[in-house]
Every structure is written in structure tokens, then in C-alpha cells.
Image (tube, rainbow, N blue to C red; front, side):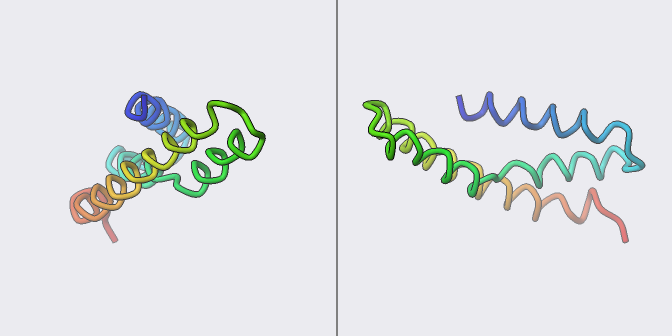
Length: 88
């Protein structure tokens, strides 16, 4: 589920950048930069739990799991790809 969400987010970012002056490599790097979204996931993940919904613990757990997967993945991809995809 997390990787499906990342795939849709990546396609959305790429589509949003089609009308810009960025080249393909810069667009790909921007996709990598948008992978980690820990702030949003943490903020939204706790809402069902605070509302007292029975599924609140599961949703919060999935949000935390998403953070634990996407934050390092985005950091690693950005660090590894910066030399190949970006120019001064």
C-alpha cells in the first residue's frame, strides 16, 4: 500500500513538472525529493486515534511505518542521485 501511494505521488509530481523548464534528470530528482513526507503522515496519522476510532491504532501504525520507509528511501535516493542528475 505504501509503495502504491509512492508510485502515484511520483507520477503526480512528474506530471506537475511537465510544463516547467526542468530537464528530465531534474524532474526525476524532484520526484526523489518528494518521496519523504513525514510531517504530513505524522499529522494525519494521529487524527483517527485522537477521534477515538477503533481503527486509529492501525492507521497510526501504518503512518509511522510509512515514515520509517519513505524518509530513509528519499534521503538515500537524493544523496545517490545528486551527482548524476543535477548540474551547477
